[in-house]
Length: 350
Image 1 (cartoon, helix red, strand yellow):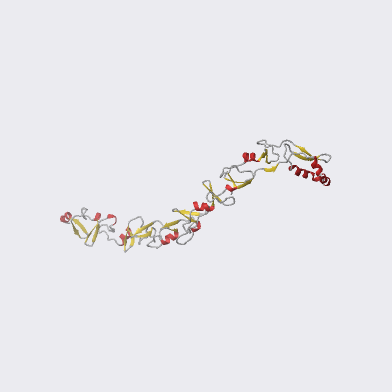
Image 2 (tube, rainbow, N blue to C red):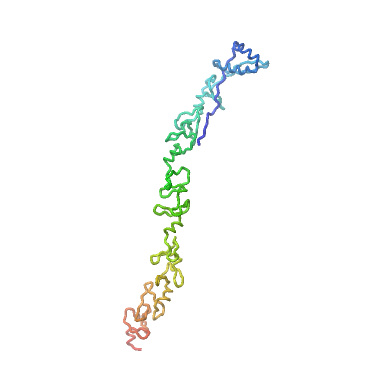
């Protein structure tokens, strides 16, 4: 709020400097005889009714108890040196000033009308600026701000109503004005009262919590996960991070394990049988045909090829002549019991 100041000195009327005419003394003789103590007051009132002179009159009582009016030294303005007798003046630490000199010397200039703020005016000041009381008003509606809350915007004074109308935003939820200084939340170019920014699921205030926007709505993380997040094909719980896809379905990484040995399969080769995932080792041991040469499983994974003949199977690398070890892949061969021979070895005989 602005501060007030009502004058900066003590304004008084100067004493009137005159001696007392004898005919007035005789006029008041009965009063003086009846109440001698009233003489100073009566004399002072009498002196103020007479024309001003060039010296100050003082009232004093001498040693014998007689009342006398004496003349003092000249009483002049400290600025213009003009006599202050019969005129209003303002007493300062530097001496008395006539009213015009005091205002010109000490008065502040109104920031609104650029006129001096006289000693007899109510003065308000705000942020090193001084105002007449009547000039301290809203720059839009001209309402007096002397006893009203206000806001300063770009050095202009505004009442709260005008400030809210011009600069405040509206709450996107309730449509009411978001008052200056109130707690608010802003997102995506919109503004909300803090208590109006609610989760679209549980309708609890989001405050400073994390939230997920979705098609104009805002959800706290638990509500969003329950409503929109994918669910693991194995445990049916929501996936928030680190999931993998298998057969077009989401899985937690820790849920995608080998059906045989329970080894995690994320990040390594695996296959399946009847929709159940298996690591290569378990699948080969449980379901893959065995190589007739090395007796190891033939899985066909990783681009590995194999050769089948009748009910027997060989890895490409294992399909070779039992005698000379020549590869028979793509070549003619002759079965010989549990073995296969190249044509040359077969013709050579046992």
